[in-house]
Image (cartoon, rainbow, N blue to C red; front, side, top):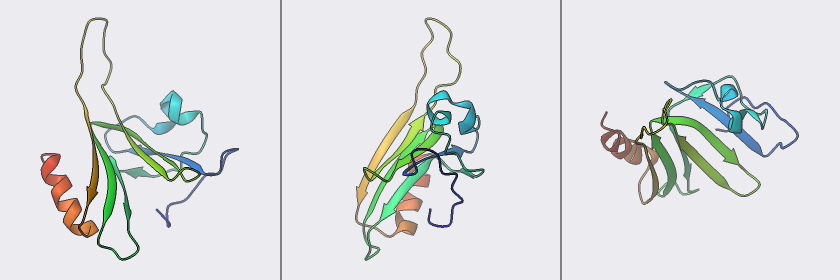
Length: 117
């Protein structure tokens, strides 16, 4: 994330990001309201690695809609999307939080299995 271009708004600690396969975050009202979406597209997860590199805190959603980060409160979110639903229809999505002792590479392998890819 350090190398990700940022678009600073009136809330410089807040960033929202577009994800692969979803509408641009600028088209999602909640994310667009922060006017902070850089022109990049990510997979549907965010992770924080410990300084020693052996612990991961992460969030992932399937299917993902957008990613959201607020550095003021050290929070990260992967928001799920349900697509367009008509009255009476239901949708299904999942969000997982990971608190694991693993390297980023080891955890990412687990995530790929969890996501079925």
